[in-house]
Each structure stands twice: as structure tokens, then as C-alpha cells.
Amino acid sequence: MVSNQEIEKAVKFLSCDQLVAFPTETVYGLGADATSSVAISMVYLVKRRPIEHPLIIHIAEDEELDRWAVQVSDEAEMLASAFWPGPLTLILHKRADGISDEATAGLTTVGLRMPRHPVAQQVLKAFGGPLAAPSANRFGKVSPTTAQHVHDDLGSEIALILDGGPCQVGVESTIVDCTFDEPRIVRVGGITTEEITEALSRPIEHAPDGSVAASGTLPSHYAPQAHIELCDISAVVADAERLLEENRVGLLVSVADLREVQRRLPDELIVLESPQDLEHFARDLYARLREADTHKLDVLLVVPPERAGIGAAIYDRLTRAAAPRPH
Ligand code: TXA
Ligand code: MG
Image 1 (cartoon, rainbow, N blue to C red):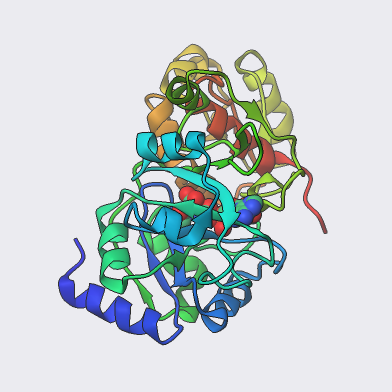
Image 2: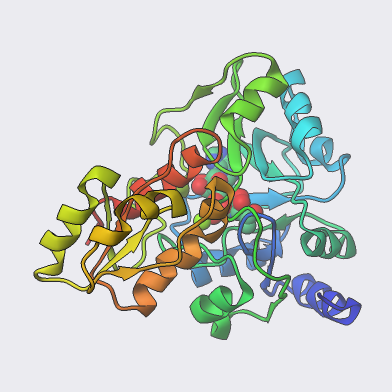
């Protein structure tokens, strides 16, 4: 997929504070040397991200947990050993030296994640240090799940994009804050709440929205140009007819839901490719949201899937994509 030569090139760029986009199992990341304040300021600049939003720090080796964090709780250790490498980020107390203050937005905590995508691991191991990697898109927009998405969004502004094919999970990592007595889920994502509950052998709380500076927890985020409207399957035909009077309208529903309404849908409605199951819904979600814009839709009607398992993360991203936008 990615040659050794390309990995070497990536390491060279990263070592002189340049940005390299690389695939992870969740979404493509915009990689930068997490110990360099110069490289980190480039990330904020290119993403147009407000500097008070900290970045997730990516690592490849188990030892790095204690290298970059202190007072790691037993439950944090349990979660790391259950889900790393994988789509889980742990918020921990930050060790004072090493990771740049800019990367953690001046906080005394640090978000650590060990991705399982082979290309992410290759880059991290070859670089030999921590990489800050927010999703490789402009702030507030739809995250990229292919190298082409990154190219479309930021291609002219970054040194290199490593193409590791389409991301398999498709929604960002789950973030668990482990700096309190009780761990709390800050962002739902690739590891389900059910899986975390099982690993901890007890239920876990969700932090209220806005309680941490997590950009993925802002009301409006992950948004394409098209207006996103969520609707129930029972209302989809009527909603589509109403909206089509004045708009170019698309529809995103699961295969099972589509079967129920297919014969009653208006002809002018643009039906996007339907996901087979929850995993595919998550994997293809951002590509479909981007398609809403390539089809120049005014409105994308979406019938959200059930909220169990990865469906909770899908529902979360859809409600943020549908939220009123700041002007
Ligand atoms: O799946 C992912 O996590 C992707 C891939 C590329 O690894 N990365 C990602 O990064 O989603 P980003 O920067 O788009 O989202 C990071 C989230 C932000 O909402 C940020 O505020 C939160 O993690 N975060 C990072 N460090 C934190 C900290 N110390 N305390 C609270 N929140 C933190
Ligand atoms: Mg993001």
C-alpha cells in the first residue's frame, strides 16, 4: 500500500516540522511532531482550528503511556490493554516535559491514542516519537476517510499524503477522560460504550456536552455544505415531498429501511448508496456526507440507524452535522 520510500519521506518531512497526512483505522490524521511547537502551530493554521482545542497524540509503543502521562489509573491501564492498538483515546494527566504545550492547548492533561492501522504504526515507529494528529480536514467540516478526501480539503497545504486506502471504522476514536476518579466518555466513537462497560466490568458515564474543550463535542461539527435533516422512516416520504417543492434533496437510509419505502419515494429524490449494516453505515458515513455536496444537494434527509453499538457514534455525528451552524 505505502512503500518504505514513502515512509522515509514522511519521516524526513515530520522531522523538519512539516505536516504529513496518514491513514488511521478511524479517519485520516494530519500528522505533526507533537514535541515541536512550530509543527503544532502549522496544524492549527492549516486546519483553521481555534488554538484552545487540544490535539490527540498518537503513539506506537506501550511504554509511551508512562513516557507522556503520569498518575495513570488502573482503569486507564485496563482500557489501554483492552483496546490498544485501536480506536480509543485516553485523556490522562500530562507529564510536564516532552509533548509541546501548544499540542495540548496549555492543559495539564493529554489525549493519547495508539492507532491500529498498519500505515499509522509504520510512520509512528519510523519517526520514533509522538505525533499529534487531528482529523485531516478544516475545522468543523466533514472528516476524511480516503486520501482523496484529504487531497480535496488540504492537498495544497501539506507536504505529503500517505494513501492507505479507505478507513475501515469511519468515525473518530472514542475519547475517555481518565483524569477523574470515575472514567467518563467524552466523545462516542469507534469503541462502543458496551465494549467499554464490558472491559471495566461496570457501566461508564458520559460527560455532559461542553464540559471539555473537545471540538467534536461542539453542537455544530462534521458538517457538509448541504443542510442535513434527520427524520423517522415513517415520515420520510412526506418529508421528501415537502422538501422537494423548493430544494434539491437526497436521501441516506439503510438497506433495510430503504426496502420499506422504496416504491413510494418521489422520482426526483437522489437516493445515495445505502449501507448494509451499522458497520458499513459508520464506515461510509463521511463519504456519503461529502457526496451530498458533490451532488449539490440543498438538503440531505437521513434516517439515522438504531443507537446501539457503533450506532451511537453515527447518531452523534449526524446530530452535530444537522445542528444549526454558526455564521
Ligand atoms: O480517531 C481519531 O481520534 C482521529 C484520528 C486521526 O486519530 N483524530 C481526531 O483528532 O479525531 P481531533 O483533533 O479531530 O479530535 C481530537 C479531540 C478534540 O475534540 C480535542 O478537543 C480532544 O480530542 N482532546 C484532545 N486532547 C484533549 C485533552 N487533553 N483534554 C480534552 N480533550 C482533548
Ligand atoms: Mg476532527
